[in-house]
Amino acid sequence: MAYNRGVPKVLRVAATVPNLPDNDKKSYPITEQTKMHISCVLSVVYHDLCSDKEREDFNNECTEFIRALREKDDIQSRVRTISVLSVLLQGPFDTGNAILGSQNLVDLMLQMTGSNDPIQERIAVEAIVLSASKKDKAAGIIQQGADNLKNLYRSTNEDIKVLALVGLSKIASSKGTDTSTSLVAEGSCQTLSRSCCKFLTTSQSFDIRRWSADGLAYLSLDADVKEELVDNLSALKALFTLCQCQDAHVLYSITTIFVNLTNTYDIRKPDKEMTELAAYAKQHIPKEHPKDEKAFFDERRRKLVEAGIIPVLVQLCKHKSENCREQIARVFLGLCENEKYRGPIVAGGGAK
Image 1 (cartoon, rainbow, N blue to C red):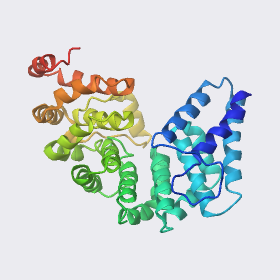
Image 2 (cartoon, rainbow, N blue to C red; image 1 turned 60 degrees about the vertical axis):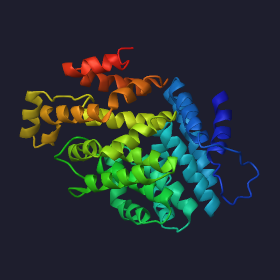
Image 3 (tube, rainbow, N blue to C red; image 1 turned 120 degrees about the vertical axis):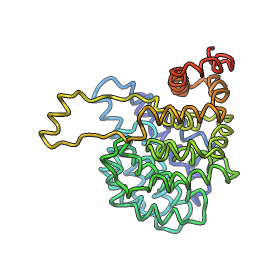
Image 4 (cartoon, one colour; image 1 turned 120 degrees about the horizontal axis):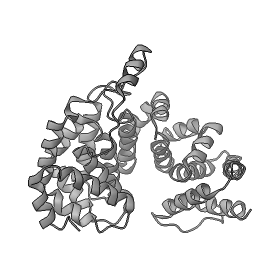
């Protein structure tokens, strides 16, 4: 099929890593957005496949490409392998996740994080951040690589340090809003949040501020973090300023923070009978944090309005990303539950 011929070509671009000493003549000039574009292409191709057989062929094509890269066990091959894995984890996640397990790439990533080579460390920690996307995966990563991430967080290289911070944030927040489960020590989310806020408010680097916002997007699921963040006016202003960029990924992270702070995400109330049945069967029952109750999130909404979130949301509405616009609509809807905010929202252009 046509995609079988195209996938390896796209993956060759995914394997290109800037500043990597490499004699491979098939490297390509890339920009900061290239990898994300490749992820989108592969994701569309994967989801447009019509049968399990075609998806299996797609997975095999990607697996063979990774296997071929790993035939040479040198630094260049390792870096390029993990670079391709990162692209797959951002695109057709199921394919990337399957390769992650079948090719023992977790061990390779963890090995690279301790290499003292900035290129290897950056590529590896980014892949770890992307792979720890679900609770079970985060638990596996924390068992094997939490110490590595902590060591990388002590790095003098700020790019690596902030990526490690996002990895730790992702692991810490994988419990979601459930207070009865935690993969990290109590209070760790607040500590990580303060570090993210420090990077966000002090760094001049766009990438570092972008990753800081990404970390806060995960950590702000924690109610204690919400309470701290909404009182941190300098961090809120830094987020508002970051909203002026046109990067959809950054804007989605920021709008996710706003959704979390205002508690305007979907909440599924468990059926009473099912809860009783789960308790009888001694199954885990999620518990909501006391600070996620209405009185608390109403107060957080008030503080955000006073901080100037309404004109920021109106400006964000002009972005073309449907996902961002959906997030913004959620926040507007939550704010409009209070009648006294409806006038300022309409006056600011929110009704459009």
